[in-house]
Each structure stands twice: as C-alpha cells, then as structure tokens.
Length: 563
Image (cartoon, rainbow, N blue to C red; front, side, top):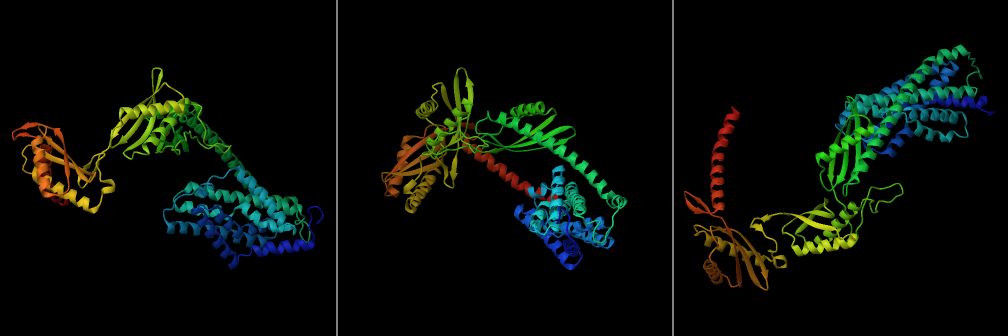
C-alpha cells in the first residue's frame, strides 16, 4: 500500500469479504438473533460484560460497510443486498426484543438501559472514529485483527435491543432515543467508511469511474441526515451538560447544608423539569427524620442557587455511625483522596459523635437500654447534648453524671451538659409484663419454669376471691436458691401486709422451695354504682361489653353488605 492506496489484490479481498459478510443468508440472521438475545439479557441483568459479548457477535456492522462501498462504487446489486440485510436485521432485532420484553414481563429498568436512551454529540464522535477505524482495519490486512475492538466501540446491536425493551415497557421516548443512537452510529459509520474507501482508491480504480455529481447524488441524503442528527445530538449534549451543572449545584448545596446535621450524608439525587419548576428528590442517610422547616430551608437555598423555582422531597433512610470500643471517630462521605474518616470542621458535630460513641459503649454492657440519636440544644453558654434513649429502665442521676464526665474528658470541653430523654419500653409475654431485673437468666431450667407457673396459678386462685384488689402481673426470679416473686396488685389502697403473710403461708404449705413475696401496690380507686373498684376492673368491664356488642353487629353488617 502506498499511503492509503491499496493494491488490486487487497481490493479484491476486501470487496469479497464485505460482500460475503452482507449476504442476507441464514447464518447472518442467526447471528442477529443470537447477538440480540445476548444484548437483551445483558441489558436486563445490567451486565456490561454480557453486553460487550453481544457487540462481538453482532453482524450488523459489515452491511453498513457494504452500503458505503456500494455507494462509493455505484454498485446497485451490492447496495440492494446490503440494504436488505441491514433493514431485515434491524427489524428483526427490534421486533424480537419487544416480544422478549412482553414475555419477561415487568422487569426493572437498569442503568445499562438508561445509558442508551439519551444519545448526545459524544456518541456521534465515537461512532465517527469507530467508523474510520473499522473501514481502515478492513482495507489494511496488518491491522484487521483490531476489528473486534471496533465492534465494541460502535455498539450497533445494544441500542436496538434497548429500543425494543423500552417499547415493550411502554417507554416510547426511551425506545426512540435508543433507536436514534443506533441511527446516529449507522450514519456516522456509513459516511466515514465511504470517505475512507475513497481515500484508499476504491472508488476510481479497478473498473469503477466516479464523477463528482455521482457522489453528490449518492451521498446527498445521508449527508443531510447526518447534519440534522448531529445538530439534534449537539442540542441534546448542551441539555445534558446543563442538567449535569444543575445536578452538581443541587448536590453541592445539599451536601453543604446536610454536613451540619449529625451523622447525615447525601446518598442520591434525582431531578427533572416540570412546568418551569425543578422537581428534586434527594435520598439521605440520617439518624432522625428531618423536620419540614429544615426541608423548606433547603428548598429555598436550592431555588436561589439554581435560579429556578424548586420543589424538594427528602427521603430519609434512618442510619447511624458506630465505632469499635474506645474509637471516637467522625465519619464523612468518601473523598477523592480515598479517605472517609476524619474530624469534622464543625465542633458541634465532633462533640455529638463523641457523645454517641461514649453512650453506646456504656449501653453495650446493659441490654436494657438503646440510644436512638443525639442532638445539640444551644442553651446559654453551655452545650447541651440531648440523648434520646429507649429502654426498660431509666438512667440514674449517678449514671448521667458519669457519662457527662467521660464526654467532657473526650471532647476536652467542660461546658458540655448531658440531658437524657428516657422513653420506657414495655416487654410482655404470655405470662404478663416483664419488669427490668426480674428474669430467670441462667436459672431458666424447665423445672424452675414449671414451678413458677404453678406458683402463679396458686396466686391467681387466691386473688379470685378478692373483691377490691386484683393481681395484674407476677414477675419471678431465682436468687440464692430461693424463689422471689414480685406481685403487682391494683386496688383502692396498699395491699395489707397480713394478706401477703397469708399468701406466703399458703405457698409454703403447697411448695417445698423457699419463696419470698414482694407486693407492688398500684393505688387506683374508682367510685361508681357498683361501689369502690379499680380502674383495671372498670376498664375490663367496658371493653368486654363493647366487644360483645361488636360481635353481635358484625353478622348484621356482613348480611347488609352482601345484599
């Protein structure tokens, strides 16, 4: 080859290879079907490797080269065969994926699919370079092994498969966008390959004479279509760049404001334009749900930053940061330098992180308590750390004082005050309410469980004869080989000690194990037509009557609804 000119022998080889590869024969359509199926499953599974495999198998690029060579040489027979192969292959690929999408059903749209629904000018540039590389690789036998890489770059079949899948889901815009990507690739390869063939001397040598007007007549329509689609994709690129700048502004604004909220990071942001307003949905990880006033402030700042009316919705994914024992660290979002653990520039956030870690370390030895989150309440000159705690018991004053001292030492700040918001939780099982500290623990043997159940039954029988007092709950534990029972008794006054002594005597006669009784009197005195009774008895009476009336009404309601 001299320069780009090729020899007659090479011309014959290229011409034969292109013609054979564009023959609309059975083997051609088999490869179309196989490559389309591979691409479809790769798109649905969001597998880039599988999609690349489909590009390697796809045979639709060779007919495009054939069309280019036919237009350059004025070979109507080759043009007809290549165009028929390309049109039938494209139609088969789109139709087959539409049917495949219907058969699979309502599958999830993947990032691999989304990336092919909005082509832009960059895709056109890639297709132009790939078209030149592919045509040049075909005419130069020394670099022809690079053709598989060219097939990957051009991506003919995946856009077609994506188009059919989008149509099957009813996503017409996405389907049109994907087909537009294919069409842009088709025109780019067609025009650039034609130019390459001309430069290689394949238009005027070896039996073909081409005139300028012939080229204008043959390539006029493809060139016009190429210019139009380039203009459209250029506009699409400008739109995408504008959207990316808007996305960057939204992320910057949200990250800057969310950094002042403890353990809160931005996860994902989605936005679109609707009726002149930017609709924004941000997903964040946070230990607590944001208040509407906080979202309103963020929304106003976004409107100022973007310069357009904005409507913001925050999806709060409840999460928190926990370190190992003795490791008081603050965590931030990953940075480009690979770091993600460092102290914040905000002292309040560092103090909150230390407070959370110290309280969690203390609670790790007490399963009765859990920390929800910590917030700062600026009161005067002091920093008040409000810790929201839920558990089966309340923290004592001594415990709070001890935790406050540890926090001050860790933060080197004596102005910090710790305040606990203690929410009690109730544990219940088939035997009633479980009080903190009253459990069998290691003594929960089948024999002990059976014995306690028998004692409970004996106590229930004894209180069945009480007219005013009611036994509402019994907790038990075993300590020093003795059974200890806590009796929760509701009544108009303290349960008499002599009654407790009678109960203890009855139990001693019935059971051989030593038993200690503790009475917890909950004074409830309700005066009514029935006389003095407890609120528990009165509540049970009315609830029972209401349920009886409801059970009588349900059949009537069902009968009337069936008529």
